[in-house]
Length: 385
Image (cartoon, rainbow, N blue to C red; front, side, top):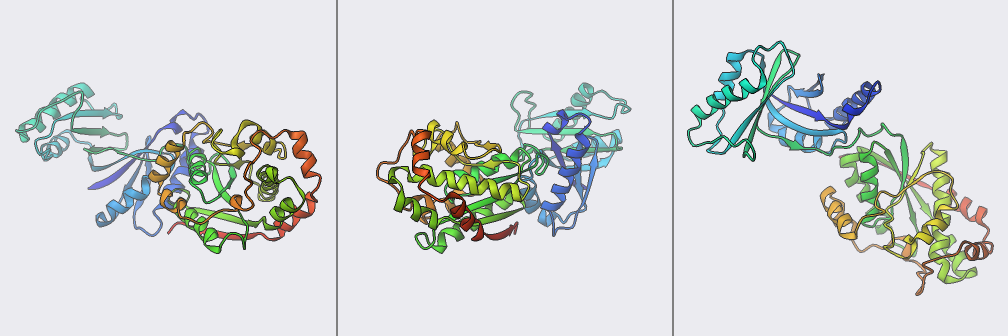
């Protein structure tokens, strides 16, 4: 019968905690396939999916490829470990004239034939039944894997499909992503989730200066991110009154710096209230005025929890390529502006000195402005379709 073999990579580096990571990964696999009929079980160093409707195989594989923690998968024929049965299965392989190599993995050491000998004998059988094929040990078109496991079964596959990799979602705690609606922040969230961080998001809007379509764009981004995250809670916060106060009382050139500092304070408040251990931003060093070293230092100065910036050393083109890969790019480039474009100064300060920032900030009632933003909070729960 055909099964899907799932392999994980980095979890093998874990010592006594490995069982915890495997359990979380197994739960995430099951969650990703909710709505499908299947049987999921752990075998030594692998997971196996069986008893699924093969007409859904393509959809199931697509969903599994997005499960963080899985390294590769293969559709494999599972048979009881018997040498004659293995030879018969290999004899039936149709390689359509492609080059191939056989790689046997004898995890079950009670199997009497060693891997090198098995490679040669099975390769000969495949050649006998594929007259137009040739062996290529270095760069074959097809890699025939014969995986002899300790559970009494052997798995024969001819395909290896790459998965998302990383660590199982939820094994590294929880973080709050500043989700702007642009290209960068969804990619930043993707990278931190790939390291096992469960993600919630915060989005700042400036209605009526920004439209309801801008907010819907962010919700649509979150839905697309749920291909990898399964679900995500979005905290939607108004900062209209903050921008109006800065515009009214402060030097306009400091608008971005002052607004970012307020956004970081609000984000930390939401994070602590919801037991989220870090903030995540899509900043890339030097990309815009608010992402210079001095600007980052000025915004970091108002928070006391970690701020993760996974894109800090990325080129814009690199970020765009990843956004396309994960499916967020086309949504991000929709022409609905976010709050940072409101009251945008002609000459924003790119290297703000903290003493000057504080002189401007003292003109504001920070606590009152933050509380008004917190009172505006709207929560949207987004789930994978």
